[in-house]
Length: 486
Figure 1 (cartoon, rainbow, N blue to C red):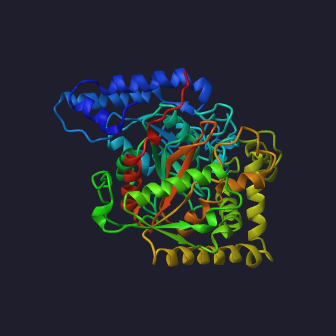
Figure 2: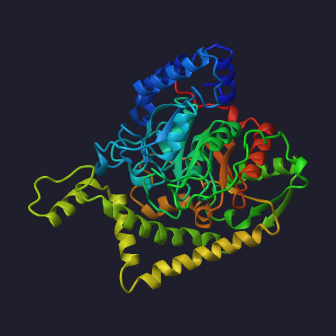
Figure 3: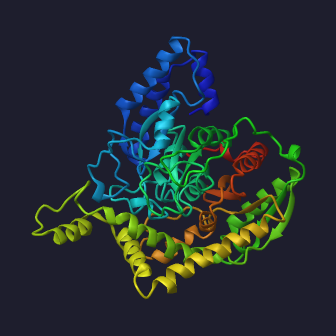
C-alpha cells in the first residue's frame, strides 16, 4: 500500500477515490487475515461510510487533510463509540463504549478511515500478543513467530499492508518492540503529549498512545494529528505542537553538530550478536551523516526492569479493580452473593498474566510492603530519570537496540514469564522517565527477521528524533523491504 502522501495525491487529483482505497484495504484484510490475525474486529461498514464522506468533500471542491481517506487500524484498548472495545480480554467481551476516545475522535475529524480494532495482549500486559483471550497474532515476516506486544496487532496490520498506519499504546515498550519485530517504524511520544482520554488504563503514569507506520514521514503525519492538549486528560501537556512532517529533511546538519550518545549498558551481555552488529552499523551510518558519536553510561538503566514490574502492576491492580461484573463486560449470573459474583467474574474473565500482575501489584501496595517495594521502585525511577538528564547534558539524543533479540517463536517464552519480561529491557526506562522514543528498522538477521534501532530524546524533542530517524531512513533501504504473504 502506498504512503499517506502518495494516497493523498491520488485523492486530490481524483486518480483514485477514498472508497477504492478503502476497498483495497478491506480486500487485503480478507486475504491475509486468516494467516496474520491482526484484527479482533473489522469495521468494514463504518470504513466505507467514512470513505464516502471524504469522496463527497472532494466532489464538493472542499480541501481535505493528509489523513482524509487513509485506512488506519486502532488498538483495541481505545474506546470507539458504538464499536466493541475488549482490550483483548474476556472480561470486556460485548462491551460497546458509549463515547469516543480523544485520539479516535481527532482521527475521525481528520477524515481517517478506521478499518478495524487490532488485537493486543490482554489489557496491554505482554510482549508478544500471546496473552490475548481471543487469538495469537502472527508476525508477517514469519507466521510461526510473534509480532511483539502488547500492540502486536497494530504493528502486524501495517507490516502486512492491511492498513497504511495504526495506533498503539506503549507502557513499557509496547509500540517500539512490535515495530522492531515487524520491521516498521513505531513511536512512543513524550508522556502527556497525546491525550489518554478513552484509553483503557493499565499503568496510568506510564501509558502513552503513539503511531505505527512504514515510514518516518507517515508516523510524523499521524503524530501531528493526535498530539495536543486535552482538558479531559489531567496529565495532558498544554504545549504548541510543531508540524512534524514539514520539519523532516534528508540530513540533520542544518541544526549544527548532532551529538549521539550510545548507551553502553544496552550492549554486551544478553544482546544477540546479530542485533549488536546491525545496530553498530546503523550508528556508523549516523556518523557518516555528520553525527558525533559518544559512548554514554546510564548506570541505573538495567534497574528499569525490576522497578517497572513493581510500579506498573501496582497501578494495574488499582485500575483493574473496576472490572467486577457490575458496570460492564461479562458477569457470573450464578453467584449467590455480591462477593461471589466479583470473584467468579474475575476468575473467569481475567487471563493468567493479568491475574499474575494484579496479585503482584496488590502485594506491593499492601500494608507492610508499600515502603519496601513500591516506594523503593519509585525512588529508583527518579534515579533512572536523573541518569537520562545527566546524559542529555552531554548529547542531543541517545541510541540503543530496541530489543535484545529478533522475534521469537510462538510459545517459546510463555512458560517463563521472567524471560518474556526481559524482552522489554531496552524500552522500559524510557517510559519510567516519560521520554519520547522511536524504533526504526536497521537490518535483518540471517533468517530474514527485522532488527530495530531505538532513538531516545529529551522531553518534547519528538521533532529532532523524527528528523534524525528520517535522515537515517533516507540513507538506507531497510524500510523498503516487505514480508511475502502470498
